Image 1 (spheres, helix red, strand yellow):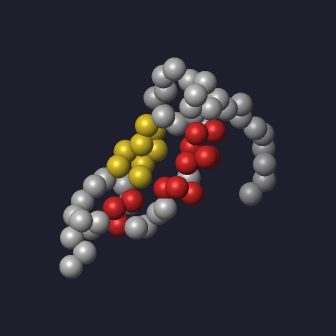
Image 2 (cartoon, helix red, strand yellow):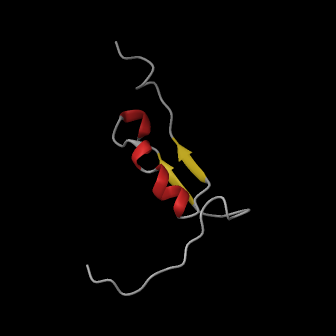
Amino acid sequence: MIKIGTIKTHSSKELKNTFVSIGFECVDRDLINPEKCYDAIMECGIKYARCQTGWAKCEKE
């Protein structure tokens, strides 16, 4: 991929409100580890996450 420019971002702490969110819909199925994303999300100004919860984490047997 060729870099064509940069975008000035604001951290989540700097923003009062934002319309940007991120989807963590696969957290309950262990498809992603959200802890690896926290720093990057904070740095790019995301304040909200959509989470899907289900029985996958509750009923292991």
